[in-house]
Image 1 (tube, helix red, strand yellow):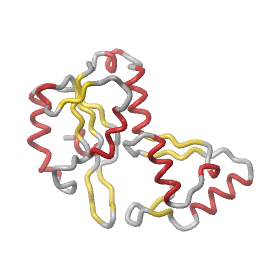
Image 2 (cartoon, helix red, strand yellow):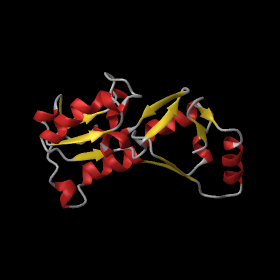
Image 3 (cartoon, helix red, strand yellow):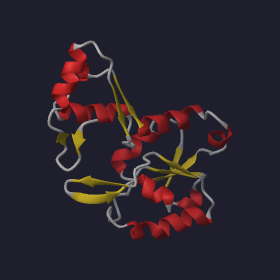
Amino acid sequence: MGRDPRRQQPLPGAIDCLQRLHMAGKRTVLLSNAPRRHEEVQADMRSMGIEDGFYTAIVTSGEATHRALRDRPDPWWAKLGERVFHLGPRRNASVLHGLGLIRVDCPASADFVVATGPDDQRNSAELGEFEPILRDCARHRLPMVCANPDLEAICAGRREICAGALAQR
């Protein structure tokens, strides 16, 4: 996507590249492992000066997760149930919006887990902080949907774990 996550702004040349591709009539699709829906990532792009017209579409892993939860495309998805434990920050909860799912506060009450990243209560750089909640999910044999396969990212100069690291555990 051409974004430097340490600075939350486009990498040098990214906007110019998108403008040139657009002017040349090329279709450009931005792919992101962001666990958020495409509208939210689009707003992030706008805030960095990347205009909507510079690309054709945005595809995010969060949007793919949302659609799979909505459409239940195969037997694995179909049997997930409706009670979901969200393991992630509030800012990523839109992946669950509009699906008719019942959000629960603990794994014991859930049918499955959706991991979007470190939650707001624990240190986002230390995987060990999540061991108790991950053990609880495992103890209840909850299937986990991972909305971001990345293991880690650098945000504002800090290493942070991503949902992929939680799912890998």
